[in-house]
Length: 155
Image: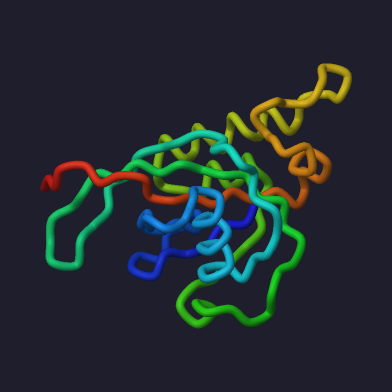
């Protein structure tokens, strides 16, 4: 699991961005994974799950955001990418990634994914990890996310 540092606080996060009308969830997930982490690969067509977090706004206050998370089979990790000077990236086991992130709902989602990836093959593949290629190499599985809606500002 690849995590990145956020630009503002340096905490470990998933690549994510504001929803864009012209992009589907998987397209936006692929775009953010490239821009923020220099990752190229195949993104699942369906979200694996979702989580909420509180976004701190530059002008003060905060906003509750809902994020859909997509599994990506990473095929290439680039040495140069748009935000390489603004972030660090690091590979974690899924369980270690769950311990590294600050958002409790994201940690729970990563632990759920870890349980599915660790499931013995005799029990069959985890259907939520489609397409099948995402199940074939769990060591190179990453999640990327997109912001799907903004909740009312609070704080």
